[in-house]
Image 1 (cartoon, one colour):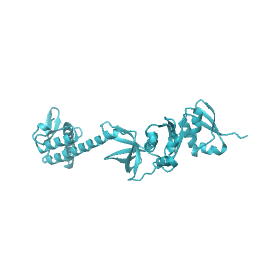
Image 2: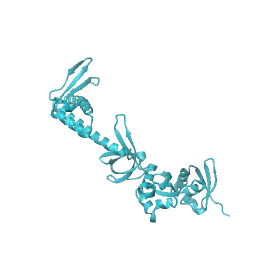
Image 3: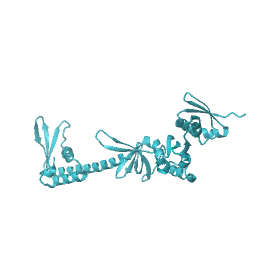
Image 4: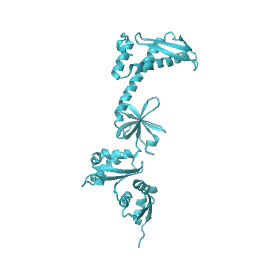
Length: 329
């Protein structure tokens, strides 16, 4: 329907203007108003003590050219005009509500389209609400959610705080409604922190090969260099630890980050992965297991609290690591 060809009623002009300014389909607005009128009619009847049976069928008809609204009850091939007296005021309110909703949806979709280009990157969000299932955050002019399984366990973020989140995905339900899904638990959250703080990672001269993480406790990041003469670990740590400290400042206080040198030599990589333990010796790699020894003073470091260090090292290298104390002569 082309409202430009309709007589310039106040209603038609308003719909045409909004559709043009917001790039909303005119027919979509009219269809939504007609659906809204049926709900408004049922609500009006209920307020007057009249219960409309669920099985009753209704349609509404909107005439933009004259700005009129009618509601009809359908009975087989017949339709009966059941528009209540004074329904024009209710219809006008309904039309305004529908148009406001359409504007809101259009604005949200414009923001969603912008954020679709940023999936996989970090964005700052303001924490608005928190419940046992999700965290609701402000993402620009709209809201996003960080589900419980995307949050760092036991991390307490106060309402109103501005924090970095990974824009993980944008989902759409069966009605086409969009939802921005955010994460602080995903491994890519750590990766993007390195992209943000380490120029060599951002430009590709230092490559993050693998990440193993228990969010909130410890992360291990294996890095390599794509250019001769660049120390990948040193680049990530920064002068006097400045870069790694900037990364740690975005994480819970208790989370540690080990940056280790990646190596295609598996024995070397295993030894690096068990950092901060030193003097690691790989005895044998067989059937997805690595038998490793360390001197007694390094054993506790190699194992880590609750076995966390050796477990993450195993994830990093793709093997189960069996640690034993090095025999002394």
